[in-house]
Image (spheres, rainbow, N blue to C red):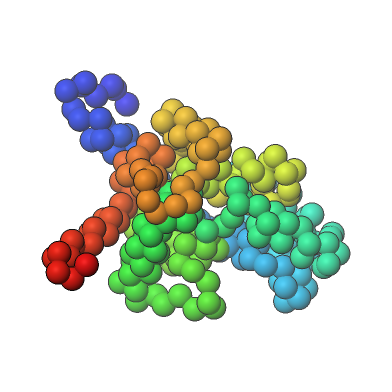
Length: 253
């Protein structure tokens, strides 16, 4: 792609480049294969309960039949490890890397908004996106839980369905880095997913490095939330801040 003129606003240049990086129109077979990959990643990122563990060998056999793409190879490595581990070891490892470490949490809006009121608005917007397509989230998980976002992407397709994944690319990169640092085999699931998304820009990589060093905000007051700052991609949803309380007349104080 030839460079865009400097007179074009930066946010427009960024969005045009992002549009070029998105996958072109897929054939029915390609769309089916892509949806299968997303569903497999979604399934394997869920808590390894007895039902999922019992299907480990079957899942590994199915994954070996995938096309030899980078995503398929990452899934094969993970599935072989998963099928060979004891159930108790799988449960302990999952809790350790996803429940006890904030840098590898699977709740994507956390990386943009931290523990602020903006996150609640972002969750509501994501749930409404699902409802607009006629899909109701069940199972009790929040709408930004990565397995839920992946299932929506598989159902709704690479355009609107994968938009939340593209929007949260920086959070996904941070999760992947954290899993690599922990030497967790789950890093292969994030690596597989990232091969399906547009490559990161220099701005993405710089923002992820800063996010890894500083972490998301954890207060409501006195912070510039990531949704409105440098850590969010240009098209990220930015919920409005609540209006300040109106001052009361002197006689009511």
